[in-house]
Length: 275
Image (cartoon, rainbow, N blue to C red; front, side, top):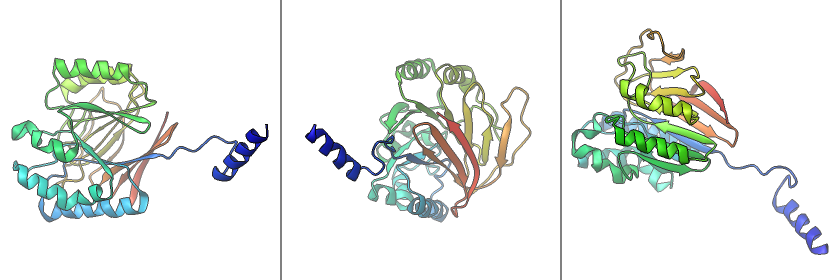
């Protein structure tokens, strides 16, 4: 008994608030799309992300596709290092998906080492989140069957899907028929909480549809696209902005906070998802 009492006393010293539920460190993610223009524009965007991370923290950078417009593997690696090499040096994780511009050379495989991608599509567990990283350039039967199996096998409280072409968009682009027909039913069936995309060079957030939230941000690109009215049958667009920036997620055990952030670090739209 004396040993048990001593152990409890030690825990009270080492763990402030012992006897209460332990606080698990939140997972912090910065996601951005359509960044790969190279040159001073990409470097300036990367510097804005670096400054924000220095103030707010991040565990993972998530590239949402069109990571390279140059169609030159060497230029891609140099541009990424110049813009985001600080993340590697700070031991911040990196992951990504392929956009339509990425697959024009080698099917995008030259990006795999830099973005720590094991393939065109894959599942990655980071903290409390299962990320389902998909290739929307080819919504084929094989990938869809893999997604069904991976979602069914996941026991994570938080399931987040990421791919380039949005399921829903009201701008230069609209719905991706393959995504809506093949993947959206799986997101709803297996309780995916959040779907991230880019492709349209703006920011759009849609109301929950069958338990799933859809958010896109292609504002890492210097060339922005206008917004349009949404067609009937879409989930309601609750926020749309023609602006540069990125998405910042803070994911706790039972709550996800997300923001649209300007490159200068000011937080804009805020949304909450309960786990």
